[in-house]
Image (cartoon, rainbow, N blue to C red):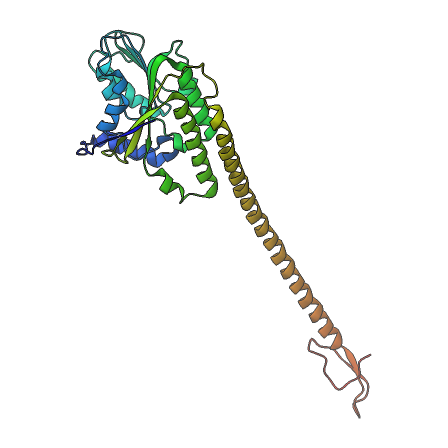
Length: 324
């Protein structure tokens, strides 16, 4: 793997409505949106690089997690007249916007095969059944936000759909290791397992990367060539043991977090029971003391010259009589 850095460039002008829509969706569900702003132009340029200079070829292209279409706009002009682009976007509001974007683009078709056809699929990419493979797959999915099992399902599906000689591109944000230290233990362990899993795919495929500083936030674009062996569990044998260790750490951290939460709940429950029991005990003691005091106040007086008599009251019974 190599890591070539792309020099910083002036930040591109943002499309106002697109950015506002993206921010609104991020506030609605940051886990699946994965960012607070669309991909910048330099990031989109690198993600679509495998298509450049190939307009004369009939390519099949898949874009997954297209969002508001910031990368889609870079993809469409790179398609030759006999090429085809499938766009998988599970967010229905993003999918509707993508359909409008595609239909408004000159020479494109939003529904059904057509020369240089583009089709939007409002569904998750792992459920897509295209019937054919792809020469280029561009992924905008926020893997760091997903469960490791979901990441593995998606990556295996990508590599199943990638034709021999094809290329998969995706990106990850920089600085996630520092942010990860601020997360709860279980989430931190999940992030580490996802990163270990993705590192296994990169090693297996011989990935290369480039850094994009002129993006919000800065990102790294990864390019994975189609693997030589058939799809399956794309972890090289030397790495499988390490991945299993990280997976075990993640499971242990998750179980510990659940156990801590359970103990806190049980402790709170025991506290409520204990407080209730103490209150009941105090009430019983007060009632008993009151009854004893009342009993003591009932007696027969035998004081000198007072004659025999009975004094009844609710006081302490500390008279001069003799109680029987």
